[in-house]
Image (cartoon, rainbow, N blue to C red; front, top):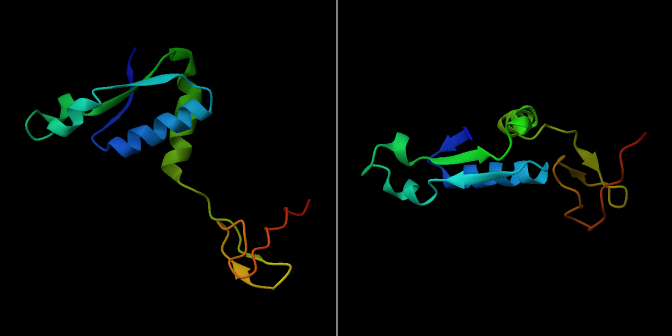
Length: 106
């Protein structure tokens, strides 16, 4: 099993692991406890490593990694149908009146 991703940022590795598992890709962490030794031990030796359980999952895992690195896309702002408040794309509920964002027009 080869290392798919490694980092000293434990939160990044755990987040990516969660994304992969949500996509049905089996993976595990290696060196999780060693990350706290960075500085005492060469960082290349103590970075947390994310390992794929199956090499066949590599193409799909690469796609998940690319999407994660790209970050969330910018969507259009929306207007609440009840109170006419304008809200940014990431909000699903109006902060002013509590109405849900309407489904996208088809």
